Length: 122
Image 1 (cartoon, rainbow, N blue to C red):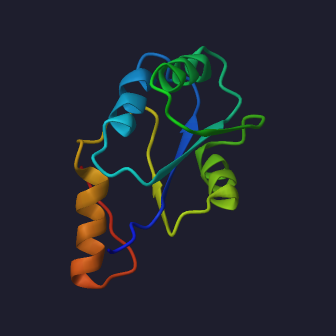
Image 2: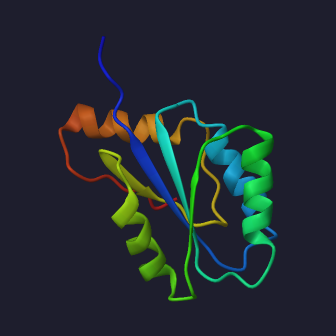
């Protein structure tokens, strides 16, 4: 049986309380199950982190939360990279939504084409 590589999804959070619930739910609803979710609170001034934690806890979905003063999206992603343990790292903005098959399809593309990186412009 082939093992499924761990995918680390790094999500910076800053001022997205209107969008983050749907974004988090799109991760929870992935058909691919070997996901490590890393939330990086980049000093968000609103209730974004509280909303994310509520949705994740209600769904008993594991995650890591790192808090830092606001340093911008790039540094928040770098913080997530430093603690990620996955074979693959995926960035997801906290106002984006993934289709349920997204992680599976990206990994299939990597395996099928023997490539080191894949991205989507949608």
